[in-house]
Length: 140
Image 1 (spheres, rainbow, N blue to C red):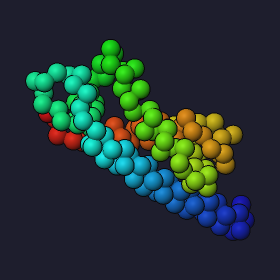
Image 2 (image 1 turned 30 degrees about the horizontal axis):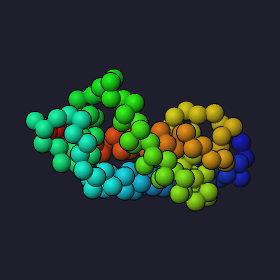
Image 3 (image 1 turned 45 degrees about the vertical axis):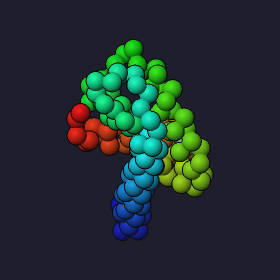
């Protein structure tokens, strides 16, 4: 391999590291925004009064620590999916392409997706970031 080829490989590896770092930061910021919205939404009461959940975020964290509850899985998707979808849909295309590259890398997606917008992968990565926040929260 020539020095020029190796230089390009090194540059592409550094670029990919930068894309991954950027994407982690972007998903983290979007997950925090969803978390803040859920913290401002009153609890649904689905778990009863004994747990004293005040917000939907409290309930989501409880479900993350103690679930998943099969009976509530669909209900939680109905609550969380609109937030995830809004965050993904409002992403500028250039950013979405970079987030898709990261998602493809992390989820071992099809390499044909590189350079395009992969909303399902982005949504999965965003949900994982949100669950990470909920998981690291102190148990109730």
